[in-house]
Length: 270
Length: 289
Ligand SMILES: [Zn+2]
Image 1 (tube, rainbow over the protein chains, first blue to last red):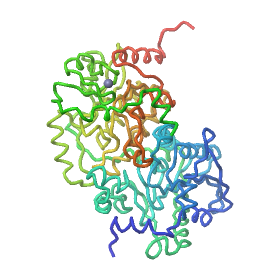
Image 2: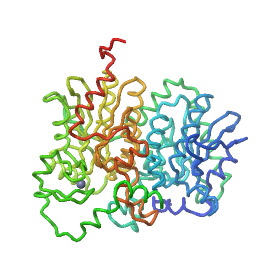
Image 3: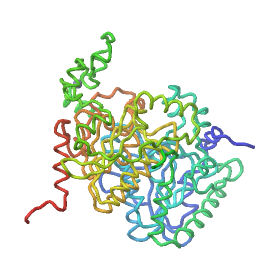
């Protein structure tokens, strides 16, 4: 069966699709959540903490989509404010200090768009994460679990390896936003999804996604333990690949991973 | 919401759209209508004033050439990467044609001019975005030229001055556009680690993915008066909060107030301000202490 991008939109929106609240206990041991950005507040849309991955201490930074209304209220439906991105940066620097790898779990429609978010510098907060993650001296593995929406996802997506779950999408803007921006008609969301090149296999071809993580059955919602096991297997292999590299080599490769993306022609140089 | 009442008190409460909604259409080439205060002035007068609104001091958009003319030492520009053109990475229908039309109309190849130049005889790498080309959205060419400009500056130990303007990501290039945020910010990071100066000048409008990447990463961030600066689009926010935002929301002044801009500088003082800042960072400044 050929699953299109718009089918994937349905799959990742299925009630019961596992979120980081399901995955963290299944993948990490002795997870301690750490709160706050030390500047303004604690953003429930980004959960951060430390724990063991198969015996290795790691830092986890994860975007929280709620499984019910109550969780969604606490996590603002997974749409972070600037303090969420600043918490992410604080924990990333802490990981660097203690030489812990960072595992980012991405699942957001995008950074929150609101008055307070603008006042507290949403743009600056995202920009700072992107820049500092680029030179963070510890391995970073990012995984898109469902939706990877725009700069709000990229803030946790500057990494040594980017993986996507089989049905996850990653886009410059949500398909809905794309349709309303370019065609002034948000209802053409599915059509937008199908032309935007947002699936894991599209993004692998474009050099954005490094690995596609298999989902069980019709999607992760059909067996969350199995989905977690696939993710766990991937993280283990990715960490093995990255931990054996020297930090300078790692950073050079991280820089180049993004450096080469772009398609243009050049006038012949005389 | 008390946030709005504070903003309104400070910058006045009348939105220009409300103010001018009923005025008849006027030929745009003869007259300039200020998007901030709604004042209509003769183009001649407006142009003579450096494309600044005579009533409210809103600093309107310049072309990259106009910007270079008033900023750098005459004849000092060595332009980088002329002739670089975007391909169509996600095969977006009509994108090539759209680009070609804009090239013909604007004489630009894409939305940014980069190069090496002098400002009051100090060498600097300059980046000027031009909103007349697809609202200076960031696609492959914008991302690559800015990245190369920073890499050149890092290799040659030069400061960078970037005049930013952008509607955000280039939707027609999809995810490739998003990745330019990471690419450019990576190049800024290396320039930063080399201990070199980066000055951002935010001009109208600096928004979206450009605000959320290299534009917000300057050591010193300058803005022109009354320009639009923000991350999310105003309509998106209005849709979320189901309320109309005051016109002054996301202005340069709003950003200064909230701590995201170092200073607001009038266009006529910009060149001299930049020259002073460059001098202050010159390690060979000739001080006697
Ligand atoms: Zn005005």
